Length: 322
Figure 1 (cartoon, rainbow, N blue to C red):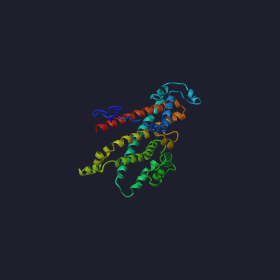
Figure 2 (figure 1 turned 90 degrees about the vertical axis):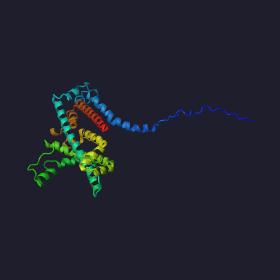
Figure 3 (figure 1 turned 45 degrees about the vertical axis):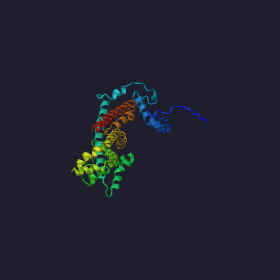
Figure 4 (figure 1 turned 90 degrees about the horizontal axis):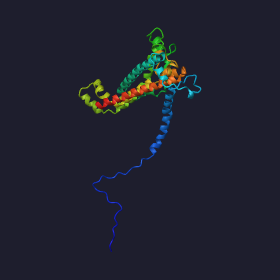
């Protein structure tokens, strides 16, 4: 009895041809899980930012605040007023910018230096290291308003603990100095901001030091490299990725910091400590010129975006060249 063999519907694949890849269907679950984050990002950042840009193009003053959506459209006039450095408004904004820039340089430099010193000090195990880590991180864990209010009490002229120690206990100065007004207000602000930010630098740098192989330090030690040589040749280059992010975050936090000067000085900061965040607040909520304040905010946003982009480009290029 003869058997019939039916030919298959499809010819067998050619052994020399590349194998066919099956198309995988992309699951929709990851995108569905992103929807709450996208909605929250739109509600918290994107929509307020677009609203601020729209407000900066309006003559939104105290005369139109009741019907703020119907304020007259004036285009870029608010930007012209804010950035006209020959006018009183422009000079005040430029003064606040330079005060903020100097404060940012000092705070970022001191915070990074203290954080690096503490991280290197606590790198090797010793008795009491866990206690020191906890104490160093206390300013970062403490709520901002609670910490700054404590500093405001310490810096009071008549009842503050700082003047009590300097005048009554140590007799360093004869008269009680003012710390929250006048020229000392700038240095008081720098001290408080460094106290707030350096634990974050310490935490990031301590985590970065954990990823450096000990073999590099041992090899450098065998080659006769001392502590400072090992710090320059091993520690800092290996901390490059951490430093890139850390310095940028510290710069943005300090330049945009509003809570610290507002709680420390109140609604009107001294002229020597007039940060740009407080200046924008005064232009918006004290003089009721929300259009001008929005224009200053948008200009600040553009400045920080440009500086951040240039910084990331230069640091990535330097790392690539290295």
